[in-house]
Image 1 (cartoon, helix red, strand yellow):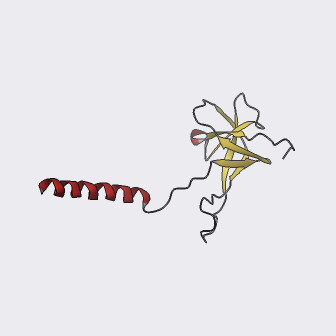
Image 2 (cartoon, one colour; image 1 turned 90 degrees about the horizontal axis):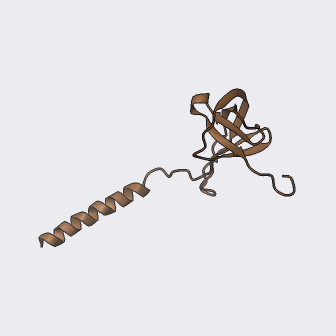
Image 3 (cartoon, rainbow, N blue to C red; image 1 turned 180 degrees about the vertical axis):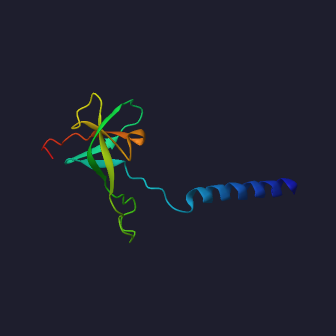
Amino acid sequence: MKGVRGLAVLLLALTGCAAGESGGDAEAICAYLVRYEGRTYTDRAGIDFEVADHIGTAVQPSCDDTPNDGEPDGTATSVKAFRVVGRDPGTAIAVGTSPDDAVLVFAQAASEDGS
């Protein structure tokens, strides 16, 4: 009987962990995108870069990872855009609230029709 009781406690503990992981607020699953001067940029991890001068403001669109849920999409966020040493801003920039927290983002390739 002790074995069954121990198994029941273990199953309750595991069930509680699983429910805790999926319960509560859902995490957003949208890609990190920013728009700057008519281009859309996405982040790429693991690339060293050096931030140069501030060149303007980029916009991070709102994330609607649960369409048709009846909730508003949210609001877009403005972030500072910085030049990246050795890169043309048309291909890569850094974005963030300051050079210290900037994230490197690369322009998405244009489609064949130029859009």
